[in-house]
Image 1: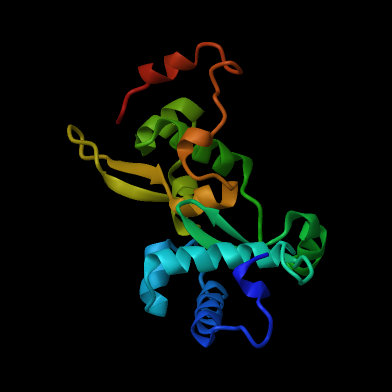
Image 2: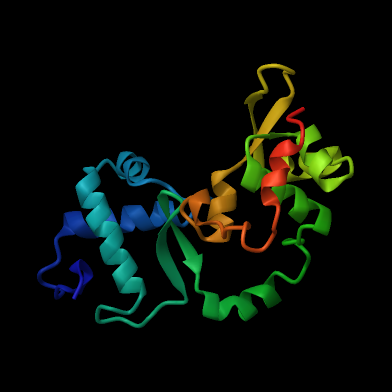
Length: 198
């Protein structure tokens, strides 16, 4: 039973309004919103908003009296957002087949991996590890919101890059600590520290 399962005569209009307000915001955000951000948006106390989010998530999961929905409300990357369910990915892929979700190139994936594991990293450090100039790839990753500038290297003033919360969201993880460990797969990974910072 969730807070959404009271009968039609027992509904609290204030609670119903809170659910509706939260849903209206969740439907338009393009990255996870924190409880505090949502609380400010709907003018409600954070504890009430957190409880409402959990009740909505349970309702969408079919844990109440209604059916399991094709979407879910997930807490991820420090916030909450509505996602389509993985089991319906083939339907979504067919709908998106017009190319609007172009995949990253091999070069972009390599560059993203280097920055994710060694951040903050400069362009020259990425290039040193990949063995090829990565400037255009880094621009692409910045444009797509997967990495961002994070200040400058103190000695050389070279721009530093780190990954973004959007990348965490796409990977379905809460922090970079959840990335798989590379050391068992790549003997000598410690040698990466020998590459210059700039």
